[in-house]
Amino acid sequence: MRIVLDAERCVGAGQCEATAPELFTQGDDGLGLVRDRPVTPELLGPAREAVDRCPVRAIRIESSVRTGWARGAG
Image (cartoon, rainbow, N blue to C red; front, top):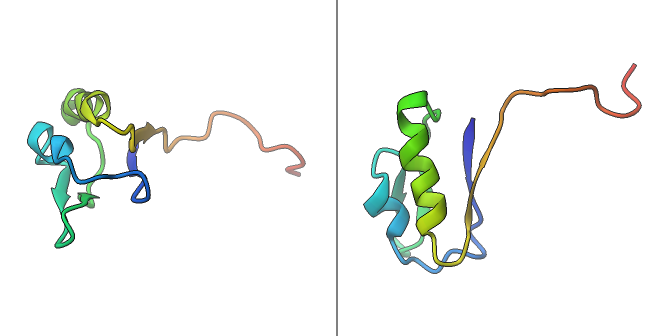
């Protein structure tokens, strides 16, 4: 799994870093940044809480595992 933060939606509220500092930090501009690390099972709870606490819904968790074939794939 990986975390995606939409920089265009982020307003710098800081809830992500306050909730899951292992996964988020804030840049020099005050906007959220995702730390370069995988979302382990131990960090999934804090990651989900950060998603829920983001006031502008700029964060999502995506699965990094493909579950099916792409249309048109050989």
